[in-house]
Length: 121
Image (cartoon, rainbow, N blue to C red; front, side, top):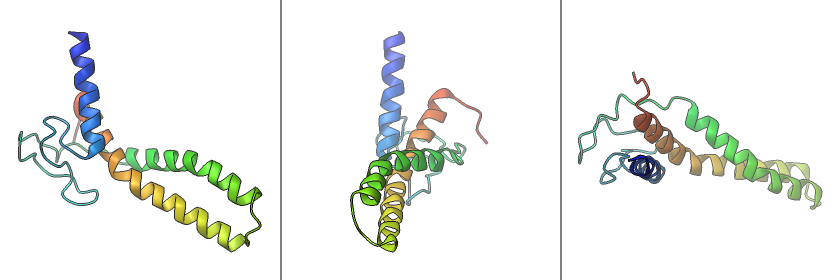
């Protein structure tokens, strides 16, 4: 029975990372960039009550910082670019990573909150 529970957990997380309903995987979890649907049109799970709050933003910045660190080292110590070019490049890459990762992290947090049956609003 434990193996089945583990599979269900990882399946829900994978579905959330993809932006699909963690319960059924058939419908989209978001109706816009970060706006989650109120109810899944396929399985009718209530997603409006699950709030990820600041967790996805924190995780996105954590990931972006770790991905950006080698780029920061390279562009700062291995190139002879003007400071404004280095700063602009680092900001653009950092913001791009955050914007790419943020919806995936929100889906992951929603899936985890749903799976663990954490208190919801």
